[in-house]
Amino acid sequence: MAANSSNNTSGKSGGKQPTPSAEQVVATFQRMRQEQRGMASKAAELEMEINEHSLVIDTLKEVDPSRKCFRLVGGVLVERTVREVMPALENNKEQITKIVESLNSQMQAKGRELTEYRERYNIRLVGEDDKQGKADASQAKESEGGGSKGGAGVLVS
Image 1 (tube, helix red, strand yellow):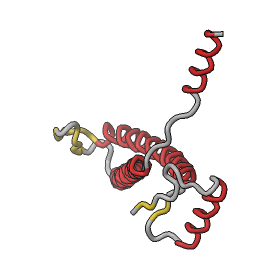
Image 2: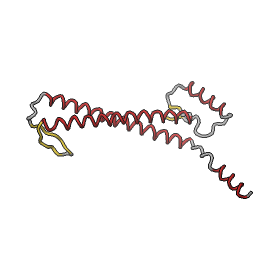
Image 3: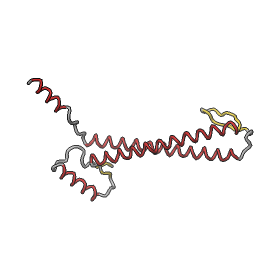
């Protein structure tokens, strides 16, 4: 019997995780938003690099392949010919394009994660339609039995 009672208590304590405080919910939400913003700014930066690569490639296509050109490699200006530089530029452009596609898919996944997190903790952003937020909050209170425990109804600026 003693073995059964110890198993019951260990089974009960491992069931639920404690609900995070409102401050923890807001901090996690802000961190997630910042991560998404960082991805977006990096994607925009890489898009600009793709445009620069395209501009250079288009310009060099009209030039004699044996003409000398200069390329910045690791902070060092190196003299090459157009024939040598073109394949490297096209390869770099393709690699950057793949990275941008990867970042875009990661941003979409982060957006879905943020939306789920907002819905789970009933997070409303400043400037959202207050009537919609109040209706959602009253529905959440009714479904929780009138209690507003956890991070429900958190307002984030």
